[in-house]
Image 1 (tube, rainbow, N blue to C red):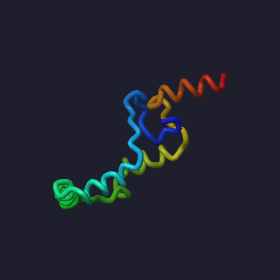
Image 2: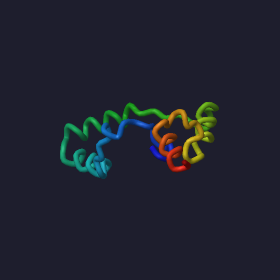
Image 3: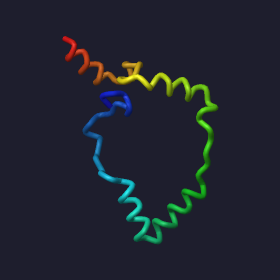
Length: 86
């Protein structure tokens, strides 16, 4: 959040889960029910080429700067930066 890579949310709402992908792989391996769910999700997935979407390219370029160029999206970061500069 401090550099604008994640949306700014209340830190009280954040729960660190560690290696979630490893846990998901382990659960899928040990449970037929979860494995069937994974197969169903994969079967329903679609893809599209983001490089062909102009609005995505604009957002992508704007987000290359750290912190994000639109500081209004990150009021807590803006406040912390202001305090450091003072």
